[in-house]
Amino acid sequence: MSEQRARVVFLVRVPAPRTEAFLAAYEEVRHLVAGGVPGHLVDQVCQSSTDPEQWLITSEWASLADFERWERSPEHRDLVRPMRECFTDARSLRFHIHAQTPAFAPG
Image 1: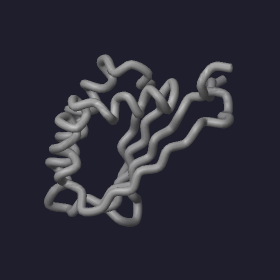
Image 2 (image 1 turned 45 degrees about the horizontal axis):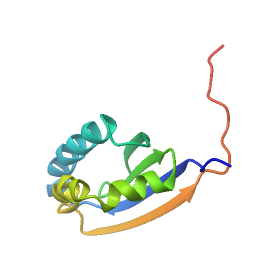
Image 3 (image 1 turned 90 degrees about the vertical axis):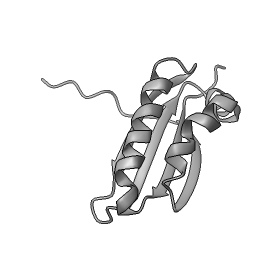
Image 4 (image 1 turned 90 degrees about the horizontal axis):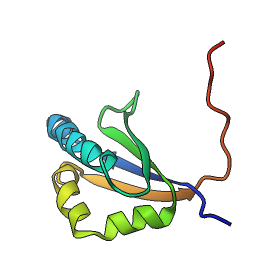
């Protein structure tokens, strides 16, 4: 059996004065990861509709092992440091994708 795709979720708190720096750092990470980290499929950054200092970063990976290799790399630590410096709180969760709905196809 092949490895299951994985979803990694970061729930972070970014004080309002750090929002611009956080989003700029995320843009750097996003483009570099999407451009060549093996196993990376897609990511999103989302802001809470009720608490503007609460953010959610999700990423999908071909396997959890792909994410963990990237997370352990020195390049990862250096690349995400500016973004992490904006957090006052962070929580990380990892999931194997069990099932999903088919992609929406407008008719």
